[in-house]
Image (cartoon, rainbow, N blue to C red):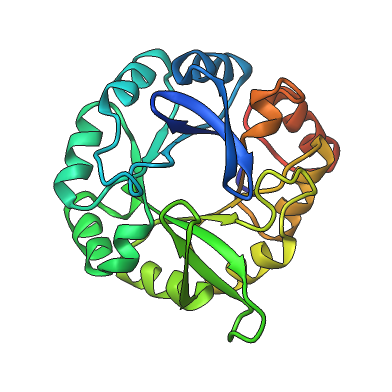
Length: 254
């Protein structure tokens, strides 16, 4: 029996407010994270992803109070990322209501962090967050970035994803920096390549602009689809996306 695909709103938070930009630049405020989380929970979101988009850049801890207040309002899995550097950071986040954590920059700087989190809390807690940019001439054509997409690395995206899975990552959140905020659709090539090398769930992120964009990402290999702008603006509801997926023959959670 096929597994139901998940629809996940993403709350990119800066200074306690949800923000959104294009290609991770020109961020503008979109609302209060707790209020938006409550709205998406009511609409039938399967999970929520909360990313403190400047935590690593500003060298500060994730805003635990916002995480706590969000967790008190919604009763679906909550993934939190941004500024996580140690397993103790993970313990603190789980203590205030997070179900999973996303790691990116700190894991690239010190890959052993993936092992430490997986060994202490289990692979099901650990989401590898990949902010991926096209890089012609590299092995896969894609490299990962750090610090909220601001810093380009020479680390091949597929090679890093494969290594992180071997170290214990339980899920891949694959965000296309090139597609992010453009509303031109997900990077289906990137999703497909990640599917080929991954035996853990793949979440497609970056580029959703209409209800019709989500099914192709699932067909390309995503287990879940994540979006921000189309939900925050009210252009689409969670229900709109699920209806489009069902119409395309894709099983979703009620």
